[in-house]
Image (tube, rainbow, N blue to C red; front, side):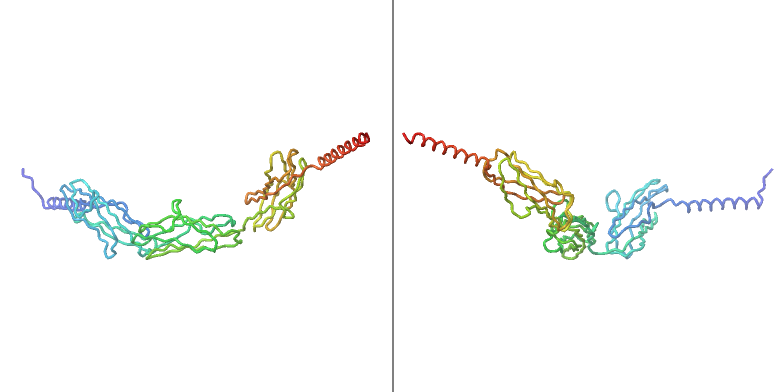
Length: 385
């Protein structure tokens, strides 16, 4: 018996065939066989930085595909480099079912406005890949000099050290001369990696760390002193200001109450030296200890032995008791007395003259008298014969 095909069954078959064709076309449209891919298509950077992209060129077809590749910066003119295998590339071929990688290096200009910028990587039938860059801050075509901590505090005897950073935000290498404006008598030195310098070279888009050492003038009064630092080349310059806050200066003096630095002493005896410890600075001095260097077998003691503090402009009396050796011969000797504190040290050198003991003088006189009396007795006894 012959099977008949009805118009309804034919229409159904045609509909099913059309649906299959459309479904296949839809799948093909949803999953293209040639693709460009990079995981980061929207990055945020600062002026002068460089962005590096790795871009996969994917061929899921059953044929070798070749395409010209280029990068479009539009009218912006940003610097870029498109490479593959370490070489610049203009065309790429990809085997069926494989992928190749392109490397894109994109440099953000130094002089650029803050905002979003759009670019496009074109690869022929592989399509195009949009890339977006966010410049997070306003760019500049200049030099910048910054200070990590611009204000330092200390005494006049202190050395103030600051950390500077010099940024070259120009398109060319710069040699900067380093100068400063400091008060008269102050010493200012620049150093890089521990070596003193008067100038530095900085590559474009790079920075240099500089150490600034400031030594105040001796006995500089307590005050806050601004110091302006300059970095200048032939085409650009920058400056920064630091401050040195001086809280006072240290000064210590040791002398005698009558300002005489000499004394007499008898061998084996003691002699009191009335001393004065003076604070000649503008800051308090603490924990002053007294000591002395004397000839062998001599001794010295102090009252007081230590002074807890001496206010600025004030003085404290001290008694030094010196005992000479009982074997000391007549003559001049040196006693070096010292007042020491964590902040300052002062010394006074005394000339001590040793005199012969009066007892020996009287003994000598007595011997002379005894001898004279003996001679006189002999003359009287034998002179009449």
